[in-house]
Amino acid sequence: MPLEHPGTKVARSTPTAPLSAKRVTKALDPDRCSWSSLRSLCDDPLVLAVDHLMMGVSDFEKSEERWQAEQSLTSYEGSSFDDAPGWGNWGVPLGDIWIEMVGILDRDALKEDDRAQMFSSVVAGGDRLMGWALAPNDLDALAARMNLPVESQSATDKRTGQRRTWRQVGFLETRMEPYLPFFVGWDHPMHDEAHEMTKELGNPQVSAADVRMELSGDPKRLSEWLGDIEAPCSIVEGPPALTAHIVSSSGDFSVS
Image 1 (cartoon, rainbow, N blue to C red):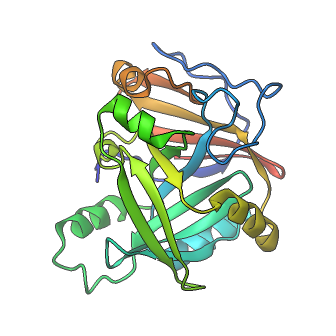
Image 2 (cartoon, helix red, strand yellow):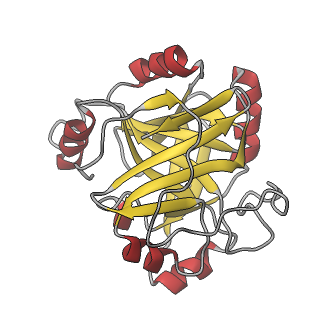
């Protein structure tokens, strides 16, 4: 896990114009785009929307209270990771997208785990936005282009006991460069569930077209990583950092 992340900041704001950058991806055109697929925002398979945001948290219950107090957003207990015992997630569903809170479920089981110790040091000062995911139509083709493996993952829903599976590309490679997106392919209708949970919990609806990432890092590295893919982001050269600007039905806010 990277140690350069800024502390998480969640604040109501008016979305700013894209940052001045050496490379700014093409802006998504809402007139020609709609959320008609679980994998891509547009018919163009190279134009992708943010699938979900990944936040590292030190205490799920306290994070739940903070989201409710600061943004009037309700979260729910998620899953335990089958391939990473002691780790798990909660979710903040927001219509087309969701915010995944990742953290340690069993500290005793991970007290000798180096990754857990590093993670704990990163989130000790507050929750961190640690990554962002895109969901391409063809994950295998993307993996082949990037010359990266496709990793199969699974988790068990702590509420229902249901086992969920997905595949991902570039997750480990982006841990030290969190401004780079990783890529996911769901084996179940995750976004249908996100919409259902959004309504059930009373959270505001967010359109996938209304999430934009402002990044700090290496613009050339981001350009090479994305290749022909267009994503809703802009970047300036600097230390690795990322901020998500979100426009919701009840107001705008930013997460970093």
